[in-house]
Each structure stands twice: as C-alpha cells, then as structure tokens.
Image (cartoon, rainbow, N blue to C red; front, side, top):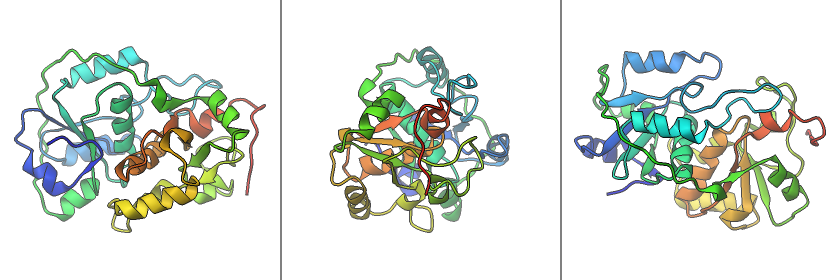
Length: 282
C-alpha cells in the first residue's frame, strides 16, 4: 500500500520490514537547533534517519533577500535524496514531535521535487512512544541511489504571486502562524510583526486534536472551506514564518480532499525583506 498524506503508528509498524521504506526523523526546535538531533541520538523509531531543518531541509540564507528557511537548490536536493537512497519505489515516512510541521516540510519538498510516495506519521514521535512501540539508537545503513527530480512548479508561489493575489478576490491567502503572531502581538522570530494584507489566520495547530493527531477529514474540510470561501485548492496560497508550518496546512487540506494549494516558501520572513511590501496588524 502507498501512503501519500498520513499514516498511523500501527500502519507504520506493520510495514517496518519493507525494503522499500525510509523513515525520516525531523524533530527540531527553532530556538535550540541542536536539540532535535540530540533527541534522535537518544532514541528514535527503528531504522529512522535524521533530517535537520537548517542543514538538510533548507538552503543558504542570503540576508535581506531570502527568508529564514529558503528552499535548497534542486541539485542539493537531488544529492540529499540520492544519499538517502530514495528511488521511485521508496515509501518515505516523516515524523517529528511537534504535531507534524517539520515532517510536513519534508513531505511537501519531496512532492514538489517529484516523489509523491511520502506521508507524515499521524501523532508523530509522541504517539509512537505513547503506544509503547519499539525504539532504537542504531543508525540505518543507507545505499546510494540516483534520485532525479521532476519539479512541479504549480505547487510554489512567490512574493509577486502574492501581490497579484492581494487584488484578486478569488484567491485565498492563508497564514499558518499562531494567531498572536498573525496579529503582530507576539513576534519572537522575525524583525517585523504583522501579516500580509488580506490574509486569513489559519494556525497549523488548528489542524490537530489536543492529543496531537490530525482532526477528522470532515472537520478539516469544514474548517478550510470556511476559511477559503470554498475555493478550489489551486486558488489557495499558504504562508507562515519561513515556509515550514504552512506545509502543515497544505498537508491537512490534501488529507481532507482539497488538493493543489500553493506554498509561498519564503513566507513572512521573506515578505518583510522589502520595505515596499504592505503589512497589516491586528
């Protein structure tokens, strides 16, 4: 069976002996950037490898030109995914311990670069441990592949696309950050506070139940149909602080049947690099 959005811990446990499975631990802390890898070393899902948000899932930051987590160059991703041994038959499963935003970043990137056999572990590391499933400290031995990208440009939006969307009432612009950051009341990561004018607050945490698993498909569909005025997926653009948690909203929409939403990968931290771009607060 192929998993393309979410899978449960039980489903993952049932396929752990598959030779075409790659599990990726994406645990990360934006404040303590070495914490995720340290926790991986202390224990992880058996045969999982580790992916660091800054070092593996982001490209080089150019001050004043990029956001905090720019996408890597395509050649860099080809090398990374080849080093992981990913080929056309590989089922990739990503997880973290924060409800899925960092895992969703990898999920989105693989789909963007042409590999759709990728899913996020629902409930992540916390659910895996809660269910008392096996934990390991061993590192998986990887066999090099020759990953060849097939970029899907329709999945990506840039600042110019967003500016056009500001005057286009058909397009819904969603902001996946917490509501206090959206309002400009609590900005701890970026130099300017507020949101892109016309954006609708859609915090990624609203995709989850209190215990950390994704909400039912019907609940998510109702949530996003309300926020997007029932727009089709291709008429939705999502951003966040740096292009990470926005992928969580896109995953939630894909899971509930709203396909094709675009990611503004540079997001807020890129938007504010140009003082001519408008900002709203409140």
